Image 1 (cartoon, rainbow, N blue to C red):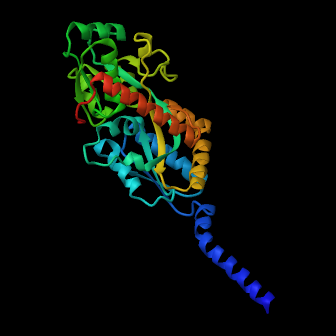
Image 2 (cartoon, rainbow, N blue to C red; image 1 turned 120 degrees about the vertical axis):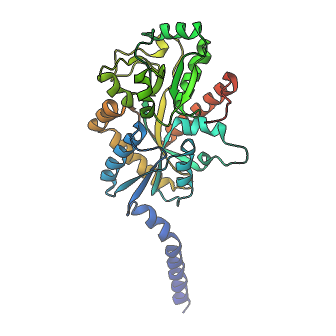
Image 3 (tube, rainbow, N blue to C red; image 1 turned 180 degrees about the vertical axis):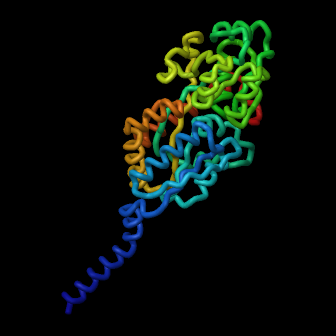
Length: 331
């Protein structure tokens, strides 16, 4: 009888243990077993959107499940971030992020508002993209040295188009002015494509934008000139375009793109997703498409490495904002 009672006790303990542990184990062991969402916090048609859709398609193939793209633009990318923060932390809702979202926008969150980025965790670094400085037809400057000289002669006269004041586009132009003692006038746009017609028509002197969006303009020989790229080194897809650092030593403003998930997402699922994303990024055709059509250089790496990059960029830009007078209200 004692042995039977002991057997019953052990059996009940095992059953209870399985009852408690099996849902969590099953959630991770059979992940993913349904459609995933990739939230892109920008409008369709831009470089970030194109990258997100490419990754979503290829990631779905790797995981054996569809990855549906949802565009949620607004509030400098923070509306899309909140969409992911409010979703279940189960690894089925991902967020495409830019460095402007995690290293610039958080410094401009209104008093009393919550920064959604604090509830998001790094998943994978996808790519680095340079920004192009393009000049209107007829602007009497064919390179960065001539542009800076022109800007110093007439402070504030030259206009530049860029995204809002929490974007890498705007920030890179402000850093350039700060480092060179020049003054340009900012004209905000919702995206690079929206500013191109004004650049071509001469109503805008300069445009700081994505290489993919500007490539078609230069190819049509409408007089638009590429002056430089924002990265420290030249961009492989545009080897004849100098980097700003060749004229302004030390200048390097790289736009980074990556994926993030809710901070409470199980570590096993984060690891599974990161491995799948890296497999996608190692594909030569994916790398070629990102380089030539989207205007970026594939990076990849662990979630921890992406987290370290986020921390470095956020700290560096906090120092720049504090020292360079960038504390204006976002617009």
